[in-house]
Length: 450
Image: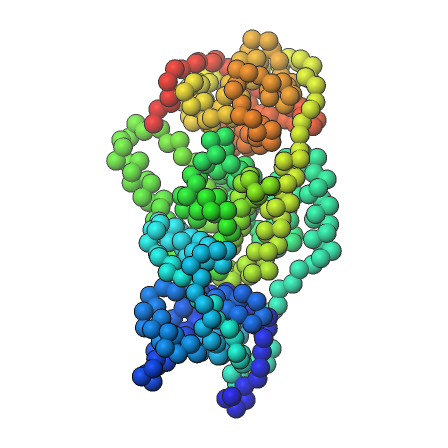
């Protein structure tokens, strides 16, 4: 042992295993020559084992085959303290939970850069930690150790379980990201009727809510999490996000000046350094994803990922339990006074345009069209979730929690893009349509302009 070094446990150095500062591994072959290379992942498995990603490991792989002993060097990002782990190679995982989680994390890094399937994980090496020490340092104490406030967790669990409706549940969830995890930027995406896309239904901390923005399964980091049902956590992403925006803008420009832009941007920070994306699962069925972001490196540690996972599971289960069963509301009349606005609906994909500006599409668009037609033909302004759900003309999917989520999405899009049509909540399962301008409705066949 190096003079002045002292023993530590893996539990003493959690931030060293976050990948904020690259680690290195030294192996020695049968010929006695050492080889040092950097590691993209050093992950704690338990108190006595670590997991290493086997990438570009040709020389290291040969050496461990001849001599299983190696040394891993770690750096504590908060203090700069150095740690050494003497390890012995045990086995290589090529399938199973450990391998799939590591593979998802590496693929997510590639997806973040728009380079899906660029990395190939050949295996995940499990090593036994024979000895772990801190090298001599003038800094005696480590950085702040993250902990979980169990009283807050219990209070959160009670609050989630007692949510009055889906909108209340989403509010509680995002508030928990702020109050429990100290994260001021988060959003919730739900699985749509096709089972192949996610759409944003609620967010907090962003200049634009991103309500209605979509991601296909397998597309980017969020789509990858949805596809594989594994969480992903980044701790150091010093990358510029403007590339994908520039590519999209260039494609739109090439398509011609007359193109109608129908893509809604995801909620996003100008420069993400840390991110957690967690699947929301109920009875093993994917309900949606919960995404937390920060501009600070190392903002989310392993314990935070566990807390987000617990929160996501509780919210998913609460969503499946919420049901609306209120009777049809009484009719009412409104007399708006202003210049008429044109509302156009495209039957093929449910797209709705107001004064030639894209608003929304799909189920939410069809629901709005139905409400506006009832408003003009019957002068109705109050409706119930139950009557909408039972309306066979809407051909709603058999997902009971989907309707309320789509109404929340529709309300948010109207708040952002239209100042003369509002949806106001009256009671659980009941809402009011508030319109302050005359409307003209136009039903168009086929799909909306591309």
